Length: 315
Image 1 (cartoon, rainbow, N blue to C red):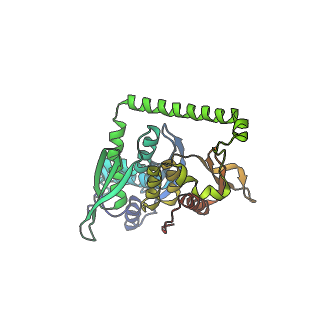
Image 2: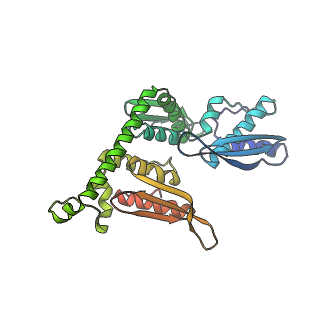
Image 3: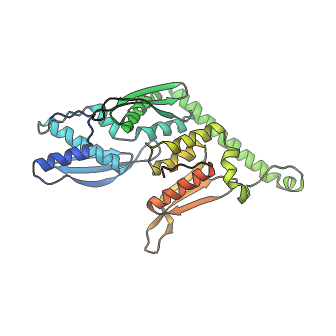
């Protein structure tokens, strides 16, 4: 049976089934390191060995790189006539990285509006569903169709990414300059506050130099634009975004500066394991969260949604 790239099975599952049918050793996956790129984040590399062949895949996460490696192996087997699976280059490209994250990253870098995602159509029988997703950045809209919601969302973002990357470089330069100007203005404002500390202290001006503990839970909703808050709440409700990703996209949508370390050399457990840490870099007050694995992400997510006065049962 010939399966297209839009089939319901993942590349990892398909490759494993091929090996099982031929009664040979199951695929062996190994991490082969990481690479840095021009855009924020890392590229993970994973190798797969099966049927006497070895391929290396890349992705924004270890899981993506593993799927990419399996896809390349299936494509190699197809080219050698050892597999009947039909894989196209476009699907290979889409699966090699998280296009949703890439769209969000480029919007932050170029000072564009926060991207919005919506499933605008779902149709077809249960055994062959079809979903259409829309990716919107300001007035730019791109749509794509796939047999899964996640696939449709990735494909729509893939089209949006091509559009944004094709925009004139001058737009990007101007955006970078505006960000630098904003940073300079922030620095000048901080200097002004420090220089006039005594005047603030001795006058009746009500400008706050900090946020009281009792008022912290209202800080986001009172100091951040409503559009950004709505965007952050929308991200929290998005079931296609996993918990780990929400811990980064929500503060970005709010325009907050933060530092997340998955191996903080300054924090270790009793057995020497490095802890994860999340620090909100904000002049109003300090926020520092640390922990391990999923409990860490649960704590960060719970903190962010609490500050948004928002509760979502998905996590």
